[in-house]
Every structure is written in structure tokens, then in C-alpha cells.
Image (tube, rainbow, N blue to C red; front, top):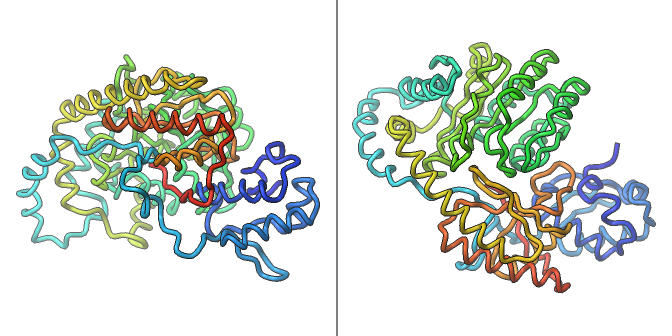
Length: 467
């Protein structure tokens, strides 16, 4: 089995590459977060064998990276990923005029202020309690359960836990049921931070392809049957980043297959309410079987600053989650829970606002894409972003060049397990139209640089979170 570094690089992509260019490719992987700080890299000898290059070329490559502070090497020991001293998190030293397309999230709903005011008496009534909320407020759990019932999945409040966001929910699930060394089926592409969580918990990702036209469900089912993964992480509604939606009949088939092979399905519904004009509403995968653990969030429909998420699972799983949760947190903030109760009480207003904002953002991206030669925007009926085909395998180069124009832009491979999908870019449809228009103009300039062979300064690319 090859190293993760070579999986990310791709043997064919670096064939015949000189040491300087190879070091640049590895540096880009580090700065884009596809290689993590502290991660152990292959030895010089092992990497030379995998890439079919001379030992001296690899020694020179690692030496260049070490000189710039991107790896640390112990004589006769390991080589590990580092970052140069003084380098800060993404955006911390960026130009104030920079536009960050790594964040696909809208500003707050207009109803947030009023919901906050209405929530204060509810919060005041809780002052006599300890203030800790391991399960979540009963009224909020009931409101979330009602959303599932309204969509066709019978659910009780006892099958809900309130969490501090969806990613917190994923990490809680993996802490409770995870098994290091096991396989995890993941979509390719998928949400990068979910991939990182799986790696952190010791899983070995097994990819199944998704594109703007949907899933290769035959591949997905055969992979479940053939590899029998311990868990599968899926985003069936307005998939992040492709925007695809899994059909109802395929949902039930996948749930049945997973149940038969003993796979826990972790279904991320963070984007499920982001409908613009899909024209139909699928049933939740949770309606098809008890082996589905569903994760949801308020962050995309209300505001990212509200760290409210939830888990829906059968009661035995809920018990396991509650048993491990105190080891890293004692519940979710009560004020945010009280606000969420008020917001969920008026879902039509929330979804109406989301639809208007996303439609305006989508139209702005579409106008911008139409003006860039070779770019193609697929049908985008909802979700956070458009999964753009740029017409050539230059996504990472474009991401690097975009920095020169004040644009933070994660490349397509950031959403994959193996450094592939260099023809793709995720462009958020969540920014205000005027900001999107400016971003697309900068993107067009960066694309001109790439096509003209301009050299991007890779040392200026920060490690970016992708939201």
C-alpha cells in the first residue's frame, strides 16, 4: 500500500519533476491542509522507490522543504510536516480587501435579533438550574424531532441530542462508536473537515464517486458489500460540494445494504434545508432504517455564529453518546439553544430567506462563470456552492494564483482523499451578489495568470479551513 503523500501527489502528476517543482507540490499540499502538521512523511528511500526517482532528488526535495520550515528532519529518524515559525491561521494576516471563498456560509437571518429577544425569558427561567445541558433542552429536542416527523421519519425527543454544531456532532459519534484501523466509506469529493475527523479517529477512507449528476450508486452498494466498512459518511441532500441530491429509491437501497453488512451510516443533513428550486423533497434517510445516525445544524439556515447542531439516532446509540460526551464537553450553550427554539418555530420564514439569498448568489456566480473561457457551471438547484468544471487540471495552480489577487480559493483536491479532481473548483453561492461579482472578476484575472504561465508565490498560501 502506497504512502498518503504519494496518494496526494499522484505518481503520474510528478513523473519527471525536478526537486524544486516536487518541493513546491508538497508545500502546496501542506499549505492547503491536505498534509497535516505533525504528519510523518515517507523516508527518502521509500519515497524514491514509490516515485521511481533517484534518492538524491528526494534528498534535495526534503532539504528545500526543511530550509523553508515545512518539514523537520531528525538524523536517522523521521521526517514530519511543520509550518514556518510565525505563520498564522488562514486569513489572520490577509489583506482587509481579500475575499474568502473557503467559507460557504451566509450572514445571519433577519429574524435572529427578534428570536434572541424572545428567547430571553426562556433563558431566565433556567437560571435556577446547573446550566449544563448534556442532552439538550427538552423543547429544542422536541422541535428537532418534529422536523424529522414533518419530513417522514417518526422521531421522539429521546432520539435527539443537541450538540455544539454539526462537526462537533460528527466527532462525538466517532468518539462513541469509532474503531481505529477500520474502513470508512466516504464520498469523493466530500466535506474536508469530516475527512480530517475520520483520519484523526484512525479510519481508512474508502472513496465512492459523486458528481453534479449524482452518485454511482452501483459502485456505492458494491463497495459496501465488498469492503464492509465500519461506518459510511454521506451527504445526500445538496451534497457538499457537488450540490447533488440522492433519489428516494437509492436511499432506501443504500440503508438496507449498509444494515446487512453491519455499517453505521452517518448522514450529514447540514445542507438539507438549502433548497432554491429543486422541485421535490426527498424523505430523510433516517426513515429507511435504524442504522442511520443523522447529523444536522442551524449554521447554514440561521447563522454560522450559532453553534447549534444535533444528532438523531436510535436510543442505544444515544446512550453511548451520552456516556462519552462528558469526557470532552458538558453540553451545549443554553442561550443558543433558547434562540434555536424560537427560530425553528418559524421555519417558513427561515427557508424563504435562505432561498432568496441563495438564488441571488447563484445568479451572480453564473454570470461570473459565463465570462471565463473554459469554465462550466452545472445546474445548481440548492446547497452552498457550485462545483465548477474549469476545463483543465489546473485547480491547485489557480488556487495559488488567486492569492495574488486577494482571493482565498480552495482547490478541487482539497475535497478528496487522494489529491484528485484538479479540474474542479467549489465556488460558494452564499456571498452577497456584489461581493460575488468582485470575487469572480478576481478569479478571471487569476485564470489569465495561470493560462499565461505566471508563477504564483506558493510560500504565501496559508493553510485554510474549508466551511
